[in-house]
Image 1 (cartoon, rainbow, N blue to C red):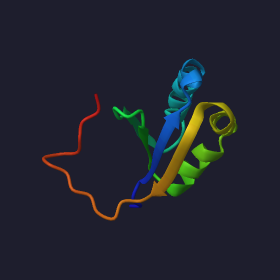
Image 2 (image 1 turned 30 degrees about the vertical axis):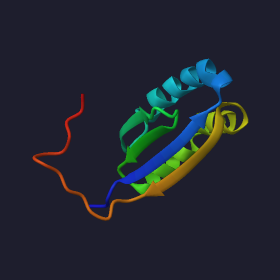
Image 3 (image 1 turned 90 degrees about the horizontal axis):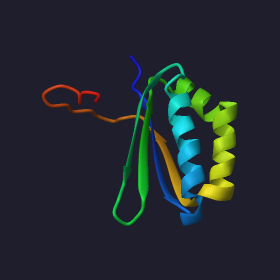
Length: 107
């Protein structure tokens, strides 16, 4: 069985973009959850304002389909033009995985 594909998205928002960003981000979370192979997304924010989202898909092909979804592509464009002061995207597969006692439960 193939390893899942993780996208680690680190970003800093432009302060003036907060309200519009939140609307688009909520829609992207909703849309991603409908995509084949979607396993989950978690987003965290550090005290210095950096945000980190971890998006997990079952396969590379399914992660790529999400990346190329037309509505997601439009959100990416808006991100570059309006929302983000900076971002960094890392797409990877796990080298190892350890869980104790079982994988973390979903809320």
